[in-house]
Image 1 (cartoon, rainbow, N blue to C red):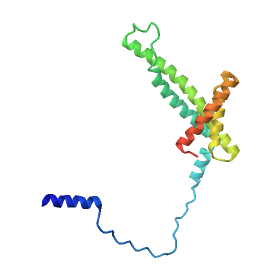
Image 2 (image 1 turned 90 degrees about the vertical axis):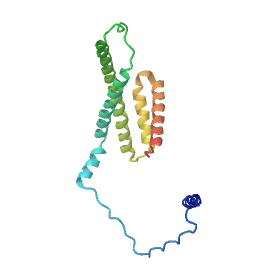
Image 3 (image 1 turned 30 degrees about the vertical axis):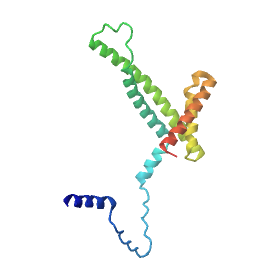
Image 4 (image 1 turned 90 degrees about the horizontal axis):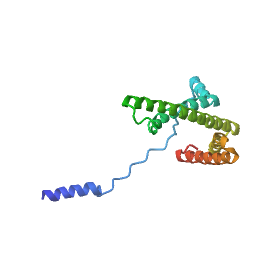
Amino acid sequence: AAATAVVDQVRSWWSGPAVAPPPKPKAPAGPKTYKRVELPSPDQIMMDDTMNNCGVKTVLATVMGSALGAGMGIFFGAFEPMLPGEEKLTVIQTLKSTGRQSLMKAGQYAKGFAVFGALYSGSECVIEQTRAKHDIYNSAGAGCFTGAVMAKSSGPQGMAIGCATMGALSVCMDKFMDLH
């Protein structure tokens, strides 16, 4: 009898009440209330103006790119193979050598990421302000420009490939991140 009661109780929890509850009465229709719109403070306006400045965006992208590049350089520099003749070094000498290699890689990566960030951020901002639109075409144009400039040493064909690749990558990233 106790097992039947438990089964009935579980069955009622699982299936819900046998009878639907009565519908709730609707609230009487009255005047609509709206939330008051707050105007931005002078500090908020100044901050918005500062952050919408192309120079500020470019400097921030450069600094953040160099920090990211330095971090990646240190990480990837630690995985560099040993130079010839370093097989017979002590542990301390090996750590020093690896540290030097990592710092060299960090500088190279920091420079590359800083240039990339400055080119992309600056060009996207200038394109956006020139077009006076915030859409995916700004990212495509900035990616194309950045890819072409970064590949300038490989000639016109390399610049075209860099333009197409970075433009497509920028569009894909914007679509993936749902920015526009």
